[in-house]
Image (cartoon, rainbow, N blue to C red; front, top):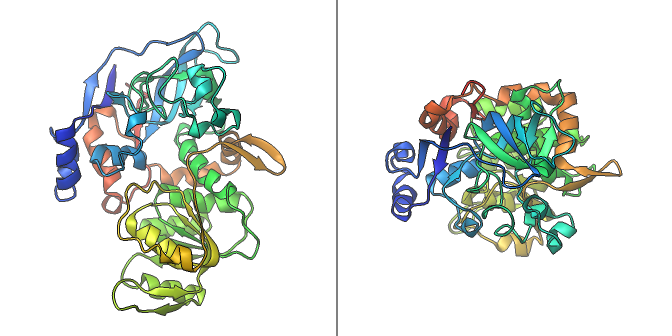
Length: 408
């Protein structure tokens, strides 16, 4: 089968990490750690697994971080290479193990990529899985498959950027007939945004700022509105196409990403700005809650400055190894800073359910408004163009770049 595979190589990693920002073509050059290859179809590891024919698979920021060698190596011990990339997956069941229940060949499904104890068939489960914190499983290097936090970073499962991928039956969520593939492929990032919002206590009077006009930032705005929050929402978005869609999804005000960002923020929030001897402006006042959906050095620093005394900063974007952040804001303003990773078991309307289940319910009602997020899909053979498109969303005026495997 055709697949886009990542193989760790220290020399290439160093070249990409330190020279790629100057020559972005290196990320898809012969020096890249990423290749289009021919592989045997993956085989079911146990009778509780299924083989999936991939239909669409998205390119996530974490995939790009891996390809460009920009991310932290913090999680590298919890991967096993070579691995086929891709964890945002919609497909159809092509083969089932004899112990699989409640599914049929041809069922259209999405994959919840977390590879926790239940997926690895480890009993008893670790303390995190016992507490339903599956995304923080302590056994991600053990069990019936190789190391990996998620599908798409595990040698034994394959990934969405290949013709076939493997999944344990507990990872499967059926897609209702009235949700298209183009909407279903957004479920995984939508669940990440939903989780960040649901894990944050929000009062009716809170003013909210979302930093980032990419897929996660826009889905966070949509999550706030779909969950019924009527709060005033500001969004910091860089490009005109991001700003336009943000307004359609429910943002009230736009903060441009330029030299006037702080001036506009202060005008919109009545915050007061002060110039220290060097560096960024210091703000008094601001918003009550800031969702950082980028995770860069500058956006984390902005989030801490934008949030007023006693407020909350929620990191939904993957932070990597940020530099030059002034942590004085956390101490001086007594901020609550919280990370939000992936998804889990949520409490919504006094009912407990998985984030994916809630996401599917919301997509059935409101999913059509997400169609502008999904660009024209790429076949695997055009993976270099797809990756460069995802890396240059301003130039391409795109949001979510996806691979189309329906004709592979």
